[in-house]
Amino acid sequence: MNTKVIVCMEEDDKAVLAEAGRIIRQGGLVAFPTETVYGLGGDALNPLSSQKIYQAKGRPSDNPLIVHICRFEDIYRLVSKAPAHRKMLAAAKRLAEAFWPGPLTMILPKSEEVPFETTGGLSTVAVRFPAHKTAQALIAAAGGYVAAPSANTSGRPSPALAKYVLEDMEGSIDMVIDGGEVGIGLESTIVDLTVEPAEILRPGYISRDMLQEILGRVEKDEAGETGGQAPRAPGMKYRHYAPHGDMTVVSGEKENVMAYINEQLSLQKKAGKKSGVIATDESAARYRADIVKSVGSRADELSAAKHLYTVLREMDEEGAEVIYSEAFTGKGIGEAVMNRLLKAAGYHMVQV
Image (cartoon, helix red, strand yellow):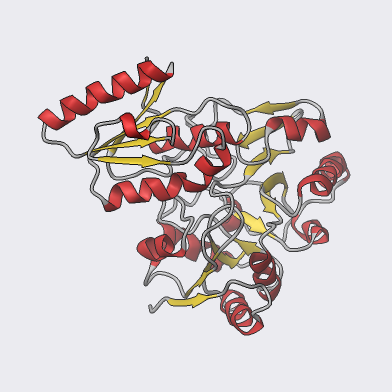
C-alpha cells in the first residue's frame, strides 16, 4: 500500500478533507492531527475498519478505541439512552459544556450501533469531541464517527509530528494529513462515568481538580493500569510510549536525582553503553550523558507535555541504549507527564 501524505494546515482545505473523508467512509485509514497527538482514523461504526486499525497498529484487540465526534448531539447515537443511564448522560452533558471541544474522553454505556470491535469487546464506549479544527472537519467529512487511537505502532511513543506517523505506519495506512506539530502533546484525559463516583482512567490536560469542579468527587483509578483484567480504556494494561533503550525514571530531591543519574552514567560508560538523559532546561547542562534532551522548563509543564514524545523518539534516532529521566510530581499536566514517563519505563522508577 502507498501511503499518501498531504500537508493540510487549515480546516477549510475542502478538497483534501473530502478525499480523506471518502477514504474513511470506504473503510480505509487516515492519520490526522488533533490538539493532543496524531490519531489513526477509521469508521467507528464499521467493524472491519476497527479491525484494520488494530492490525495496522499491532494493537491487542481488547484495547478499546476512542470514537471522535464533531457535534455534541452525535453522542446520542453512540450511547445507550436507557432510563438507568440518564444520570450518566446528564453528567456527560455538564462535562461537555465545560470542556468540549477539547482533550477529554468520556466513557459511557454504548448503544447497539457501536460494534464491539470498536470498544474492545466492552459494553461501554469512549467518546471525544476534539478541539482541533482540521480534525473536526475531517470527522464531518468522514460521516461524523471516527475511531482514532494514536497513530503509532502499539507500545511506541505517540506522534506529535507527522514524520513519526510515517516512521511507524508508512505502507500500512492510506493517508497521512500533515498538520504540523500538535498543541498539547499528550493524549486526552479519560473519565469513566459508568461508575459512582466518576473515575479518571488516564490523566491528561483536563485535571482531576477541573473535573471535580463540575462533578463533585472524582476518583483516580490506581489498579487497572497494572492489573490483569481487560483494560477499561485506551492506554491501560499494556506498555505504552516506550523507546528502544532501557529506561529508568529517577525521583527525589533535585541534587540527589542529578548525583544518582551522573553516577549511573559513569557506570554505563564503563560498560560501553550509549546513554541518554531526559532533563529540563534547569538541569540539562549538568548531566554527562552521550545524549541529553530537555523537555522544557519546570515552570512550564505544558512544554514538557508537548515535547515528551518527540524527545523519546529522538532518543531512538540517536541510538540511546540506556535512558534516565527526571521525574515530574506536580498536579494537572505534570501528573500526566509522569504517567507517560512511568509507562515508557515499564514502571521502572528509582527513589533517591
